[in-house]
Length: 447
Image 1 (cartoon, helix red, strand yellow):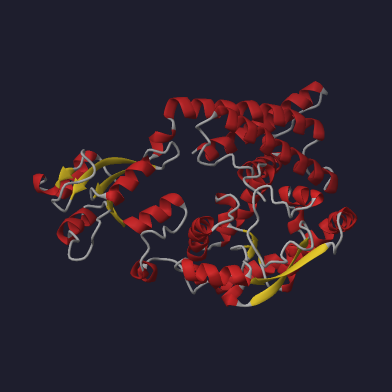
Image 2: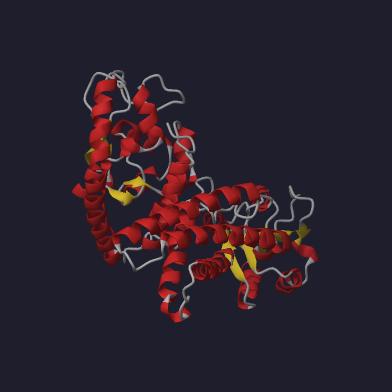
């Protein structure tokens, strides 16, 4: 809803800027229908930039300071993009003076939108109401998840299905409820989540059938967590759920061809545009420390096949004399120039060649060193499944979790990688690429 209102306000801001500027210079604004596509282009470009910098993240309505900072950056990027388009296609877009007015008006209108929506409605107005069947540790996890300010649901109640003492004092015993379906309706719940500690011979099938046939959505614990957190929870994952749940679709032939086509076109274009930057920093890296400008390393890719990854060298040449190891905070192996190019992600640019060669994609799980993969496959269940999709320069884990340098970090990142492999769509790829700009602008733990 916030995005839809923003889009309308962007159209209003663009048209207001047009009218103000034409009135200033004493010419007619002209019929609205003649500039409707220009107005739409302004709104689409600006909202795309806003998505890219994280304007519509979970914190969108929680902090006005957060919202204002992201709004200004997003609108500024959009104005720069529109100015470039105006230079390439003169006469087909706004005048630069109108863009300046549009930026100011849009900033005010979008900020007011957040104040109104945040104060009058808040995020709770759009949260789903759920009833949890279970009163153990799984139900307790859902309670803590619901208490987060950015949570997308509220819990209407808990039902203790086992009869044994629960860890949640507010839970109601099933024996005190004559009709569970009527109880769900009385609470106004739109979804029931099954959070039993032990499912074997304990599924309340009769209750679930009645709830389902009454038109209320019934969800399993792991599926609910996957949807709400954007990751596959390894603590509750079992093979049967992975086998029978939706995802890992084989019908991705068209999407895969489109993805590869995009990788080829985008990598060629990006190599042409960034070649001067790569060449400049290759010289700087070479002058800063002894050794080659580029770093080559074997990585594990699609179906476990190895390939050679190319990056600008950011560490000393003897960084892996004792074998590969995780990068650490304030890692002494990183050179002076290396610290900068890692922070702004310039060291990643040569990987575009690997994308063009077909070993990687722009979006996918980060490829790991073979030695790390062997160790992680022994310690983390389902780690090999992340290799069922082509590795990428950026990915779902990279935009949702800061840099990881331990087994526990790898476990968390694996949960996001499995979510991506399971739920891949071209739209998810587009979202990840847009959100990568947010990670570059606001680095979160880059090493």
